[in-house]
Length: 66
Image (cartoon, rainbow, N blue to C red; front, side, top):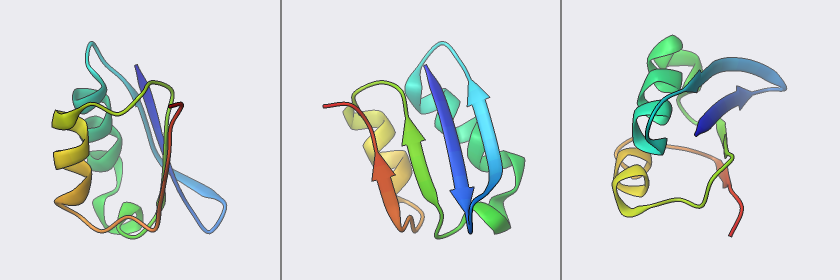
């Protein structure tokens, strides 16, 4: 599982992990200020744990397969 967070066409967090939630949390921690309100791209369908982590902060767009 891999997650990329973009804001104003600039990457501000990219991470891989064993779970999608862990990948999201790592990507978000790369630059929490820049990631706020960004676009989150995930390469797996979003599970409940990842969705709850994403909605705990503001995201402008979330894209994922399925």
